[in-house]
Amino acid sequence: MRNLRSTGGPKYYFALARLVSWLRGQDATRHEGDPLEARLPGAGIFLVTGVYALQLCDSISSGWIQYLFWLTLPVLVFFLWVLLFYLFSFCVRALRAVKPFSALPNSRIQSVLICGLTTVFAAILTQSKAWPRAVGYVWMASVFVNLAAALILFFADGRRQLN
Image 1 (spheres, rainbow, N blue to C red):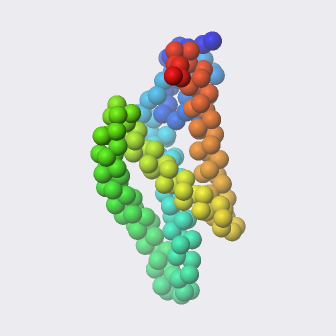
Image 2: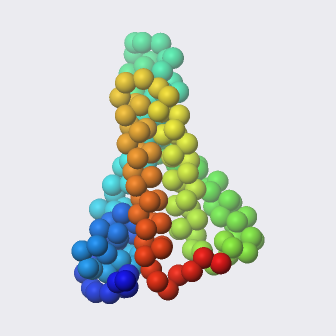
Image 3: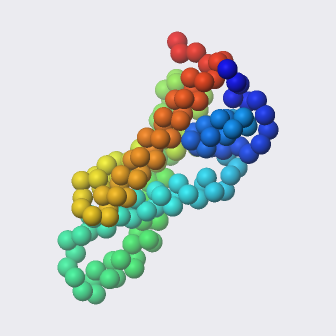
């Protein structure tokens, strides 16, 4: 079986891109320097959160108040994530006290918290109607495919063993 660190080439952070790279015979090590991989999930997280916020505030009466809310929604979502990052920093600090998490970098723990919360938002969106449901399903499918790729890469690496 081929080693995950076999050749040079582009490096990716997400498991699906690393799996495709590995299947093409290229390097499949984790790398955090690809700007597209930072922007695309960030846009997805922002989209899922924004659509979830729209669903929460769907009961706002029609008229100028609703349009004002829609115009300010991106700023409100941005400030929501700033607040959540602050709260997540306390969660990361608390998880650092637990032995298995002490070796993980802060960015990895924070990524799991962000993806988990966004997945909860997406799961709630799958219960809604029309296009918000599609947004939720697309997010859920992309998370599932990425996790499946991570499992494939984990078991494909002959140097790793489950204890």
